[in-house]
Amino acid sequence: MPPRSSATLWFFLGLISFASGCTSLTPSKSLSGFWDDETAEAEVDLSPGPHCWVEIRPLSGESERVQLAVVPDMRMAQVIEQSNVSYRHMDAYILRGSPDNPSQQVKLEIRFDRDSGKVKWDTDYAIHPNDRVIIKEEAFTVLDEAYNSLLGPVLGRIGKD
Image (cartoon, rainbow, N blue to C red; front, side):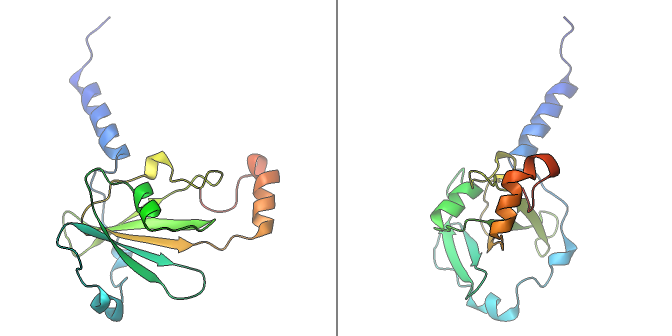
């Protein structure tokens, strides 16, 4: 059996770092001005340690902003659990400052398993200090659920997976 090359080792190390959410991604230019001036003023640092902000956006009513302390090895699934979000269908993403230019934001999409309601393993990103996590309730009707349960496996599911 031939010895394994170092390229194979680097490939797997890169794959592991990408899957864990520890890589830098290209910044999204479409998110500049995402936070309006009045919400930026309301954001006050309440805890001395590293933290992240979680914004919960229901379909109706006021958005709620929560500050969570960032602990080592904290993941997106833990943020949702600590935020006490109990939407049946939701959309979520992380806004993170770009390593190249902190004034630009990188948008990391979070995908959910629609059957279990849990974060999929490949998008359960590590949470860094000063991340902004946006959780939005998703409009999903009874007809969408019926379609997904009956025809989804054959024709494809409605909504993001």
